Image (cartoon, rainbow, N blue to C red; front, top):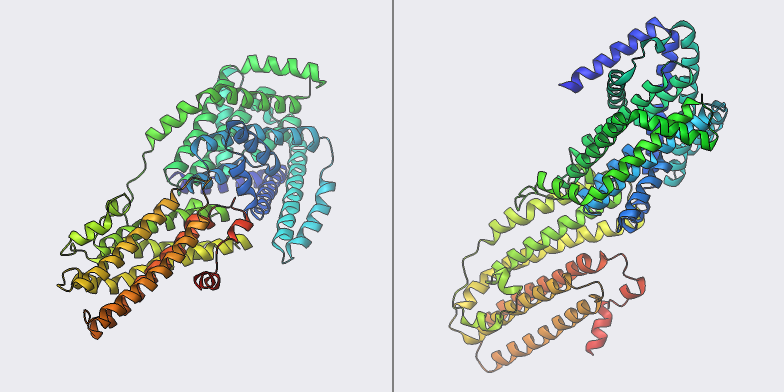
Length: 597
């Protein structure tokens, strides 16, 4: 409802202001150009988030000080705390980082966002930056027409910076002309009523423009032109800081509970920081005067003083909240409990994870591991065991021998309920990711899609095998029952070993284990064929039964090979720290045959 009212109201105000004053129109145009520059800048940085930024983030968030540093540096470079917040929510939703690391990034981003005020106050208002904007736009537009993704990204960055500079120039020019016809400073409100009023205006303008940088630049240019008082400008800066959380909140709407927790953490931090700044505004103003006097900032250089104040209250906010991160994380985890996800509903394929390549890839990987869990459940039921029996040290051979009938199990229903919906959701999610995958990501996507296909094919082979398993286990033919029991025990032991590889520590190499499993399959086939031939020669098995056994043996081999291939993708290829030399240890089919001979 609020959003429906907000847009028409903004249009009316802009139309009225443009009609009343040409100078207002110049200011509004400056803001619009600045915002378009922000969008272009964000688009440029998105071009470089195809794995590089994601890997940097993963490697720099294992400690709190690293998370703070990443948030501060990335926001300084991108000049957008909103983009850093959205990226953090996306990463958190995909499981790339934990909540404490995400909170650290948000805290650091608030420090990084203060550099924008320094750049505008110290450089933007003292130099004719429109002269720098023109060549940036010229070269930037030329690069936008190139086919290379990296060149396009650089083009967007140059165009973004050009429009930022141009927007600041028009805002400055507009306020300089505006003061000759209309003095906004006469609407100044002193004391705490003014602080709360202008903080509210700062929040509202940031919500409308979706950019605290735009509000801050607008405030600085108005302050430089004398259109707002120093005290009211400080309140606008505080409001802009609080209002910027709206972007994170909107971004978390499509995220899981982790993303929502981070958005609330962002809101809590900025609210607490804003309240501290308002409560101790006059003490902070005195501190700013002291800092300015000792750093060479003139007494009447209020724009630079605003930059000092902006840095000061954000730093104080971080220092106050830093010791409380642990408690904040626990409270947020209590507020947002994980939703109970039905077996046929995707858990990680949320919209918040689709915006950046590595987060989308990680979401697909986690969802594929859920498909693996369901596949283990389905195959366990197909083989006549329980998952707990397979994934423990239960003597499966003795258990199989004691069974005279397989437990009832509807494999078709299990596939339709547990596997097919998730498999379909993964394929749709991959197709929805409308960005260009990097070469390494394209390979990972191919293998993950292949892993899902392998699991589906293993279950379909299990469907054919199940029919004769039910008959064989109940058969009076001891040889038939023994061969089929051996087949289902070996497949169950394979699942057990793959689960052990899955949970192996990073110090252990699963590569050799997979080669070992491939060799085991060849041994099983040789033993099975020899045993079946002997049974036929000795008259213990008919030719018809042997034909069925051969067919079912092929189904068993298919299940075995498909599960090993899936394990290679999910439990080996996902480890990016695994060296290329170690991956090359994986033996090819020809090499395996050579070892056999």
